[in-house]
Length: 257
Length: 263
Image (cartoon, rainbow over all chains, first blue to last red; front, top):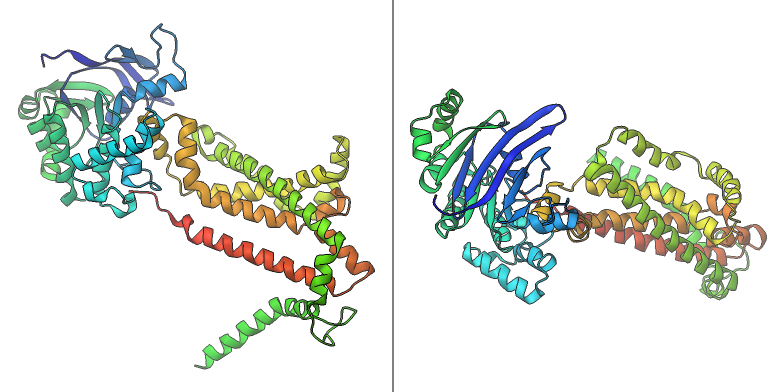
C-alpha cells in the first residue's frame, strides 16, 4: 500500500508464565489497509491482536497508532489507566463471542461508549447508535437485547458498537468462528462493506475466501512469530514455509467458504 | 391413585408440623382473653391495638429497623467487595479457596458462641454494648451471607465483558458501575434482603451486644414477665413482614436473576 503507516507494532513479546506466546513480532498496517492474520490455534494470533490495543500488556515492544504510543504519554512517561483507556479507543475491537452487554438493548450497547467515554449527550448518542445499526442492516432490532438476536445479528451489533466510537482501526478476533454456518455470510458482507469504505482493519480469521477477496495483505503466524506475509493470492497460491503449506492443506477442505 | 393419596397425606402432615405452631400463635393473637392460652375464649383485634400502642414495642421496632439497615449496608458493601476480590481481575490468587472458606467461617459457629466471643472483643476495642456493637455483630454474620450470594451471582458473570468495556475505552470503575453491577444486581438485592431479615430477628448476638432493646429481645422479655397475647399479635405482624420480604426475594431470584450471558 502506498498510504502512510497508521499502526506500527515493534518487537512485541508476550509471555504467560513460563510460556512465550509472542516473540519479537513486528507489523505495520497502512491507512485504509485490510490485513488478515491466519495461523493454527495457539500460534499467538489472538494474543497479538489484544497486544495491539493493550487488552494484554506485552512484556516488551511498542505499538504506535498515528502519533500515539500506547501506554506512554506524549512526554514519554508511562500512561495511567485513564490515559490508556483514552488511547485504547483509537482501536475498535470485535470479539469472537460478541461480548455484548446482555442487560442492554442493541441501541444501548452501541450508545454506551459515546455516552460514557466521549461524553456525548444521550439523545445524540442514541441517534448515532441508530445510525450505525441502520448502516449494518439492523434498523428493526435497535430495541432488542442480545438474547433476542441471532449470532450474526449480535456480531453486527458488536461491529456497530465498535464503529460508534469512531476508531482509526478495527481489530477483528475470529469474528465468524462462533457463528452457525448460515450466519457467517451476513457478518463477512458487513466487513467487506467496511473495507470498501476505506476502514483500516486487522482481521484474525479462517475465512480464506474472505482473505483472498478482501484483504490487501495476509500474514501467517506460527509459534508466536510472523513466518510469512504477502498478497493473499501469492501467500495461499505459492506458500514457501512448510508450516504454512501444512496449515493450508488442513484448512481448505473444512473451512473454505 | 393410592400412592398419590399417601403422598398428599404425607405433605399435609409435614405442613401441619411446620406451620401448626404458627397457626396457634396466630389464633392466640386474635384472642379476646387476658392471657396467652389455646383455644382463645373469643376473637378480637384488641391485642393488635395493644401491641401497636405499646411504646416499648414501637421503640424496639424502630431500633431493630435501624440496626438491620446499618448492618445490611455494611454487610452488602463488604460482602460485594469480598466477592469482587475473590473473582475479578487478580482474583485468581493462590490460596483463594482458603480465603473464601475463612470468610464463610462465622456461619459455622453457633450464634451464642459468637456472641460470647464478640462481647469481650467489642469491649476490648472500646465499644460498649449498644447500637454500633449490635450492628457490627450482626455484620459478622451478614458479611459471609452477602459474600456467598454475590459470589453466586458472579458465577454467571462473563469476565469477557470487562474486555468489551476496555475495548471501548470505558475505564474499570465505570465498567463496574455500568456493566458489572447491573448484572450482579440480583445477587446484591438478595444479599440485602437476607441480611436484613437475619439482623431483624436476631436474638443470640443481640443478647450480648445490645442493651436488651431490640424487638426480638423485648418480645422475649414480655413473654417472660407479662405474657399477654400482644406478643403473639406483634409476632404475627413480624411474620407478615418476613413473608413480604421472602416474596420479594423470590421475585428477584426468578425475575432478574435469569439474565443469560449473550453468546
